[in-house]
Length: 152
Image (cartoon, rainbow, N blue to C red; front, side):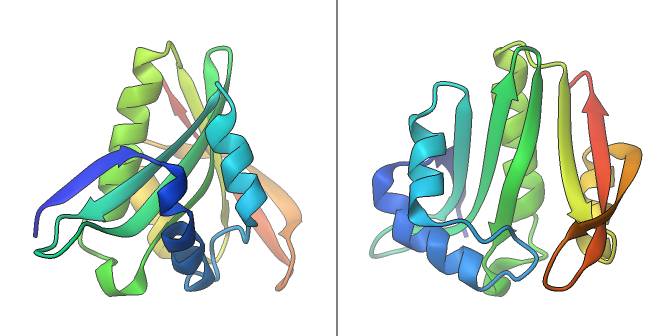
């Protein structure tokens, strides 16, 4: 299975929304949110695409926003059928590479306190605990953990 990480294009929107709908831990954005971020010169959306026999197939995405030398990983998900295959790690790694080239030194993110698989992924990518935000998430109400990667 050949996987390619590339920048999002408008034709990826339906696939990204479909993946997001299968990932309750992901932020549930609408189409306009993705298109706005994609059109922002400080936004970066990446997709993980499998090069299938008939046509490429988007199976994951990550969405970043930067301000000066800092960035935030705002949303990320991988299709359930392709989780635990290193795609999340690849999306984070490629995001780090892109952002480093743009002069970003710190990347932040929030993750649900109960989302242990995501926490393990982010820690393996070099993120460390920064702070706890009580009741940050809704449906269900839950604390958010702020993680940071310094010198992205």
